Image (cartoon, rainbow, N blue to C red; front, side):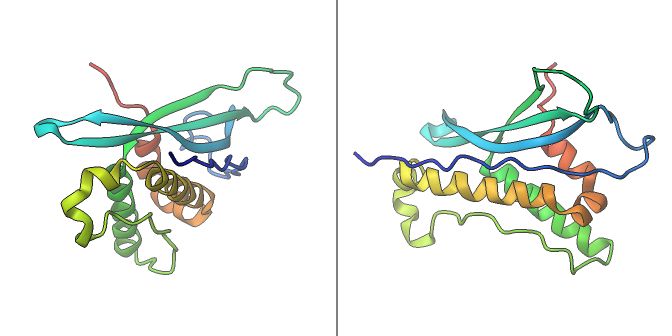
Length: 166
């Protein structure tokens, strides 16, 4: 049985200089973002897939605040959701004629020659640990890239918002 070594995410800090008219809530800034808690879900036709928990820890902008509790935003996304976000970010950069903006890569998919044992590989603990690290790297680099956030804030916010329940 292999042991999983988890890397604890390092805190990040973002500075937002947008006008208040475009910002939904200026009372908080993003303090930390990490990807964790991989949950295996049974899909259709007996397939299984991983769903990743994304946690955003918010910090009050008011430095005089003695607030002890920091609000959290949690959402869950599949690897394919990360792929879709990356494709949308690249398309936005191309459409806005900003090809010099670096959109980070994602951890690789299961290799084509291992597709015959996809379920076994895709659910392997060490594979999932590496994928988690890669997804966290991707997301933190997107969030720390001021140019990318300015250009595609709506895409990033939509990705990070918890799904709407009816």
